[in-house]
Figure (cartoon, one colour):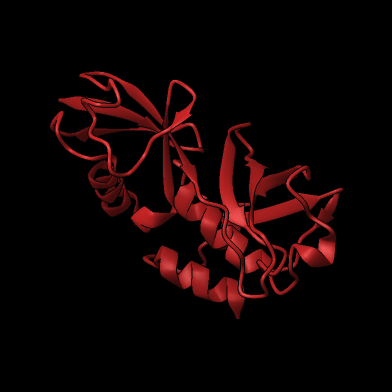
Length: 176
């Protein structure tokens, strides 16, 4: 059977499973697809957190069911709790990423590129917090960013100066 998983960014993925598969097994499949450790995933159905040891059948999950995926709150390297940060793109879509106070501007840009369905390369992202552009080497804590903070992204396309230059050379020149 196929079940639909709604991830925090609003994107949906489809997972093929058997009714006797455990929730843990479904999380492992999702983790492989999304490159996230299965132990950091939480699945909810009809508002209820699903237990890893129960089967889809025991949780009344059938063909076409929709499950909501949430990430387990973790701590960053400094022991600070992480939170979901929402970034509004130039096309008014929202990208959600898990961050902590020690996350740098450069790390945030990389997370946005990975999570976004649009191709926003790090060198093209200009992140604005209270009308100030975030610097790559500053942390979210430096800007006082919390889960309530609104971050807006402006996209400035990278100009290519040489015929045949690649996106990678554009990226490299942005950091040199």
